[in-house]
Image (cartoon, rainbow, N blue to C red):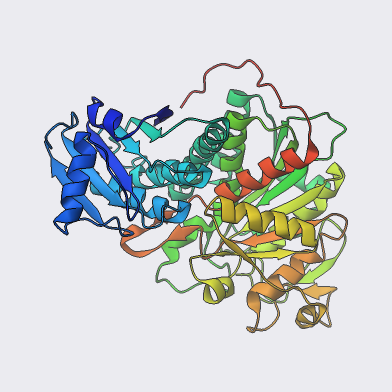
Length: 497
């Protein structure tokens, strides 16, 4: 989908030759003499439309409006959050209407947050999964114009960021939604290589032999119950001098999680294909980097494998040795994500990173704590935590900081190894983070538990692409803090899809 940002008021929007116009109107809006504004004023006087949040009014072949379809969308106080809800509802109402060319006219006082919200909401509401359908129908929207009163440099920057993030979110959703017999560890490695080749990144994909040489005993133990060979993916984006320490993103890539010997209940086990959404978010973030080209260095690490039971599978009571030399007693094979992440966190040390952020659908306990609204944020560094929190707020991709008190780690003690892989049920998301923290002591570290936010169940089942928006906003903030010159995109061939 192509987005463009234009100086476009209600009068110009009414004259646009397109399939539909969405007019986003705040409460108390004051229209002019153009046909669109007159219609909105008449609807308000009649009590049919007041600009309240979430309210829509649709018209067909409205007088003086060139587009056959017109949607008035209420945005309440006009904040980014309200604009996001308004645009999402309006675009959703136009699905299956044959709309290919859409104009969205924002309120006259729309700021950067409103522009970001409009792009993000349009992309989210128009996304349709078709990859494994015999009749791939439903992807109609092709071009979207976001209209503002005046295109300023700040609005242009917000628009460009949102457009880049939208492309990354779409890739993350697409990868997350693929069935597990297709989105295997090998496929993740292939997608990473394709991304790198198309956009000038460096990429290395390690197999079982290379991982064994590295001594990643914890990662290998999880993978040995599956016939699918593991992959360890290393992506590198260089937008600053090679001497600049990178931000490292580590994404959990369990492409299917049965629970292993500690097998999960059958109900909704199909959703465990989403257990690689942390990995998908790293790929999606790199897709956004391809568009935005920030002036910093970023490394992406993805340990990818399946967690399945067979005669070779990891058993409760087994003791494994991590890459860092620490031994782990496995009390529950369904707590496997931390077992692959811990080796990736140790591997991250070689980059001497400025910060490391791991992203994982790690615990059901985090879903109980925060639901599907906010991702869980754990951090060893206050400044890093604050930067991530601000980034999430700005990107409408919210997180909430959780504690890491030393006392929470007491439950990981065991008589038979340096630590156990689980503690008791209380504070399960925190004790999982405490486990990871033991492998992240040599750099500022944060952990995002996205078990509640990475996908939706029920009728709306599917990957959300979170937290790509948060990660993109965080990386851009680090670029501004660094004050380096913007990176130039290398010459490259068009990406093959």
